[in-house]
Image 1 (cartoon, rainbow, N blue to C red):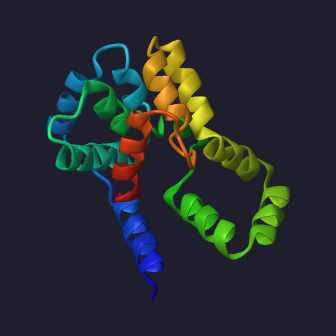
Image 2 (image 1 turned 180 degrees about the vertical axis):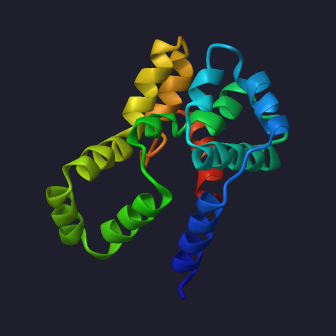
Length: 167
């Protein structure tokens, strides 16, 4: 297996077996505060775990990460909440996008519900930014909006991307 394939298998396993402890939830509440905590709480457990893993990586890479970067680590995928994509659907999407985009389009045409969830999943950065703006966090929204850009304009986004790529 190639390094990329091994990474994807490992990623699948981490998502499928994801757990978040009560202690971790309390720590997240402290980082996010009352206005942002509900957004994290609405995420599926596997996305919560991913956010916590990215936060842990941020803390390993940075001496003293600021609150914005820590919040971005936890909430960069908040727009995925509405997709309700299972771990299997996510994995299938990642695989088909790489191996057979035509087959992915055929699945989307045959399964309209999947297509709708897929569209939300693909557009999660914009959707997440909208949710964060509505919650009164415009600076965080700007980071989340560009977290998949090849050349983000914000330094905080580049720092987030560095941590996210390792998870």
